[in-house]
Image 1 (spheres, rainbow, N blue to C red):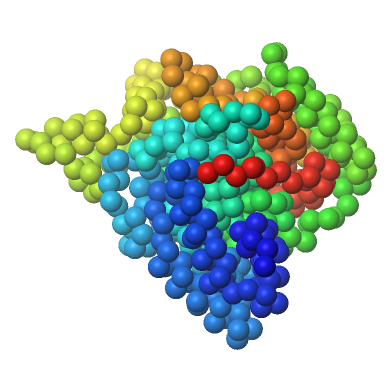
Image 2: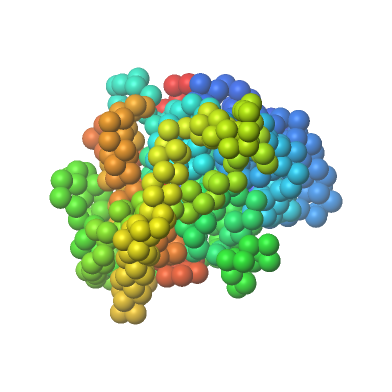
Length: 491
Ligand code: GLN
């Protein structure tokens, strides 16, 4: 039998249906792979007993012909999703050993459809970061290395554990979240596919909140089809999230292989940055050429407010974070540091429970929301946000179906290489992704090539609201042209 962990989700679904192997065998193969890859630090909690129990249940249902769309498929869950009875920490010390008594809506839908949980995946603390280096469980290793080098690189962030685990064949797919790029940037760094759906497409209920007006869940997978299969289960209306939108979830998989002939693809002028590596530029032109060869029409478009997106994001996101994180006070969750009075309790708990990056965000957020500065910073950032959204609306009003951009300004970098002295160096990773969150649009990252050092690079496609289907159709054209990328195993 071929190694079960190297199958795509779609292939595994077929193997399970044909009874070539059982979910228990598939699950055991992944549990062994996880054990052998602990050096990557992708999982912060392994749940083998639960996984085997869920696999047996799936096998029973498959035998009875009663299988859900993801029956028996082993997945990893970002530690930002509340999982009933299983420790959920957002990779922050402040949540301690918090064990939720409830399940997030997104994960409950995956279990409803028969998926199997292998464990919880590492991420940047409270999803704040672009390298997974802010996690209280330590950094995650990218399964990709530069040719001829044994330096461990970051998998990107904040969904670094999700991307690393999917790329290293430790799970068939993973949940992730994206507030400013946290699904798409790690996907690009690891040659995986990641889609951030339209804001409101997936319920945020039961996901640890970072910046509520930007946060959105989505899958990371090894192919565009696999991502489509996962999103179908994850998406849907949920009355428990007032921002969740009540429109039917399409069969995303049906969009795979659909003709893209006649589609208008926008190439935004403002994404051509000064000093952008020639390799990224080349990848972008190649991607455009592939779409053109498939019958799409390329048009130059302008998104004039792009240059303000990153500064505006770093006001809006910390502002919301400072408010969301006020709940970690030592009284309600996890960690509690001893103190003489209530104020000291808050201070001691928050001082020892939050990491440096989280503290920086809370301070920035508190500052921009404070009386006297609110209008100058927060209100102005909100206005910029409206203009960014309008840039996209103008573009789509001209008949553009999707916009093609690079996913990241560089390939993966080494642990400790970026952001040490200047946090902005790290923030710049999200230069191509944050606009999409600011506008609430769907965006997909698809592996498209490699740099001169053999590291994967991705392209991003941005779509109209609730038109994830077009992104899947176009994404698959790129995937077909670029081929699949698998890292050489060193762990
Ligand atoms: N890197 C960005 C940040 O640190 C985005 C993170 C995310 O999307 N969760 O805010």
